[in-house]
Length: 290
Image 1 (cartoon, one colour):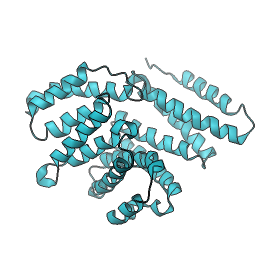
Image 2 (tube, one colour):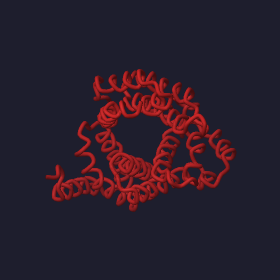
Image 3 (tube, rainbow, N blue to C red):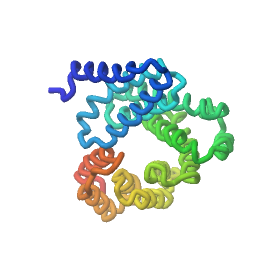
Image 4 (tube, rainbow, N blue to C red):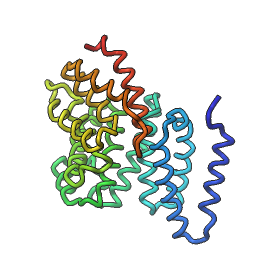
């Protein structure tokens, strides 16, 4: 039995629509839609029920598509759509073709937001790495949210297209985005950019250019900045670094710490619950790996 059936989804959309249409003032409508996008996204992040979220997100994505279509000038709506579409595709979609399609949609929205922020960055994949870094150097702290959104969505797109070396070749560009974020505000989202930099540094073996010790430093910094609350930092520390250097003791220590931790934390609960699920799977497969 599905936890959210069609009738409840329809009721949800109808209720939300009535809120948006309650005011005849377009400015107030824009303000309400933006606030709703922020509040709903926060509710998702704070949920401790991944199954309900998995089944409920598609209805919200359709609603966001409608809001973006009718409010194309509202950057925050397109940004919310890009972020949630990418997160849904990465966290819940298993079919490769569908994952690629959703990630492409998310990336298109993300680049559209970036283009509105800086007309020189409308086609960031076509820029040389040096040109991209020069444009990023002109960004300031107020641009961090956009840069993180683009970088995280771009990373998800690369992951979904890992069988395409042209997509994998974009990794240095994502690294450039995350590096700029760290330079501007490494505390953003409790050091989340450090997690991405850690993964990027450890996704390849040292023989192919991987930098395990650089990745280790980023993972440890992310753990420190979140006061240990962001369990994803420890998960990737174990999965990418400890497994990469065959450190079984560190691997098991980190995963057991994840399982013993309290997962409920502001804007991290859903991520932490899923990290605990993956930690259990990694521990179960450890004997076969090491």
